[in-house]
Amino acid sequence: QVQLVESGGGLVQAGGSLRLSCAASGTIFSINVRRWYRQAPGKERELVAAITGGGSTNYADSVKGRFTISRDSAKNTVYLQMNSLKPEDTAVYYCNLVTGPIDAWGQGTQVTVSS
Image (cartoon, rainbow, N blue to C red; front, top):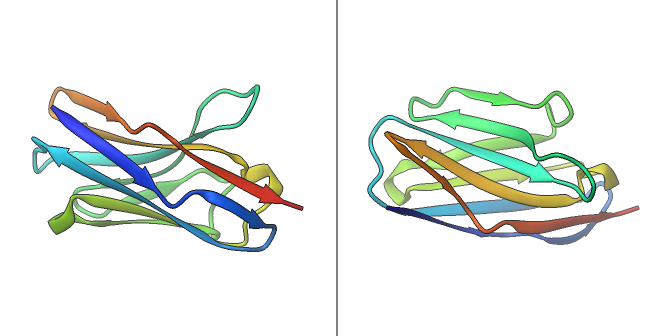
């Protein structure tokens, strides 16, 4: 079983920055993918960024150049550095880990960007 604990959300003004963290515990295979999703009120959950065990990354077009996903494998932690935040980035952010047959989700952390 895998557990994910997110932290780092909050309220920030437009143009500001936040860093989200997602710490994983449990059985994690060496082959895994870590992802950040977000869900705004009234909208579907969308993929924001992903990183593989080998360090390959991909981003939603809406966050490219502003957000950076990274990982510390020794700590089983993934980060999402969010810069130049916009009001449209306001959402609940969820981290996700897929490893072997396991598909685990965090509880979500609220990010609110004021204009």
